[in-house]
Image 1 (cartoon, rainbow, N blue to C red):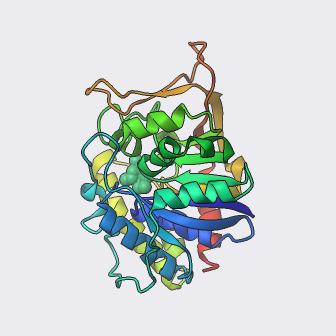
Image 2: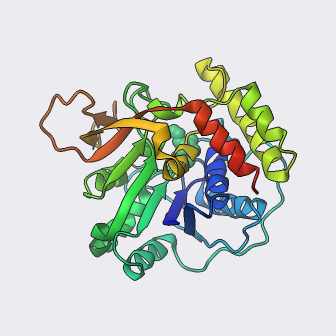
Length: 311
Ligand code: BDR
Ligand code: CA
């Protein structure tokens, strides 16, 4: 299996991504989960990550708390999408499993130094603060990363937190800039992809019909998540953004995109955090990312349902 670190700010869709990874031990070995401030503050994201591990029946998964604010800018959160707890929807008890003592950034650095070079993939599902901090503090690890597969950015679908920017990149554009310039092979799941991975009645009922605790939770989370997106975008359901990252590791052929240059806006307040993606190759700037554009949504939901059923 491929060794990964999930860097996350749960978030209902982050939670589904974690479940998908923990349900797929043949393809994926989760070395650890690192929490970051994003959808809600760090105290909640690290707790939510542990709630999800317990729900998956994997309480020995190592969960670390990381950075509680972006590198330079004040933290922006998204309770308007995810609710006060970040995991609003079903009632969930506090986790019993412990939080690791080490800081998430130290865990990322130590793991990349300890494991053979090019054998660890980073999967960021939130603002890129933990990853950028690790790269700044330990530049020697950058060349050891196998790949970064992240959810963030947008091109044709432009913004969901400002007219120009997607939430994860907007919250910490300086961190995103460091990651996009790092030279690590990047795979990016922007809103262009995730807005094609929408829930609908049939897909949500398929989760509920599993009649397991994880199946029921996924159905209730997506029910909650839908309220915002259907009202806001008039779409048929809610995008399951973050599970696209994990689905790519299991079935990359579900996604299609282009190797292009992507740069991050870090100065203009109007377009702060925009992912300026050279989709049409109008510059000679070198490609630094496989920027995805489409997903086979039926295949994606079939995979998700089949894997959640295993928990
Ligand atoms: C991203 O922002 C968060 O609200 C979601 O969890 C996802 O990672 C989508 O813009
Ligand atoms: Ca997220």
